[in-house]
Length: 389
Image (cartoon, rainbow, N blue to C red):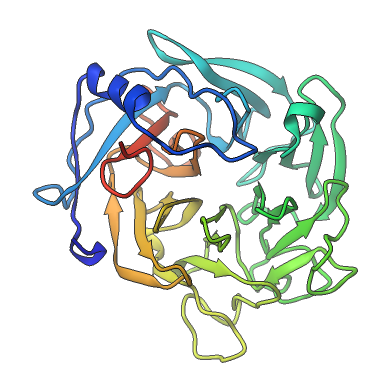
């Protein structure tokens, strides 16, 4: 069945089914930076049916992994299969798993960063684990101070060492994406943070950009300009980055008045903000791969799986899932998943076992938290997606 005709339905399964998924299915070998055992997963919750759940051959099993968190913003995995999760406003880094108890995966505070000064969309945001973590035990974080946003490195018990300062700080567009690419360099998504969008097109400003750097915070070899950190420009607020198996890079962009975007990111391109809000007609600017009205999107986290890319949305309260070709074009129509079922969705990341983890963001101002919020959830797709058996 083509991606265009696939419809999605959520199904509840018993504990035995999840144990079969986590022990009997072949997820494929983990990457060299993701070695380790998968966590001991709790049984799945009983998910509600989505708008396209009446028929179709794609099933999604949803498991609630952890509850009662406070705006979990970034997720990165350690070699033992556990995850480090940042909380935006508390400045805490939590270690989730790999063990479990009656409430889900175990959650423990691994570190609290008192250097973080949260307000608006700022705080403790992205997190990335060193590709050499087995030997250097280093993690990287993106966080806000009273004056700027910064990238720093540290060990969980060591001193916080800023490697990049001076990223523009604002109440509504702080960026915060942080991830290592297939090339081993650190990529950083920033926000423009100005009403007129004056920083995004300015090559000398760090705002509204995707940056590419060494672990010392220096421009990476092969950048468009040898002395610059800038890899791509013209963004409003980049909070999600991911690569597919063909090493093609995807990034979310949100906060524009009219449209939220999912972009295929190429070296040196300008993605249009503030001249374009969604697709435009200027040949010098790069149009998004996909865009949706802001009310249906405001998407943050991005994850890839086989021939699909997904993004998690705040205002849209859903995950958009799209089929893509090897050269990065869309197959069929993107499908909405979990619409309204878990409220605002923020982080989205592929796990070592092939599943996808997402976080809710219902504890923030203006949202409506449920009794278990905020939560981490795990998605397993039955056909052609994450964690399939």
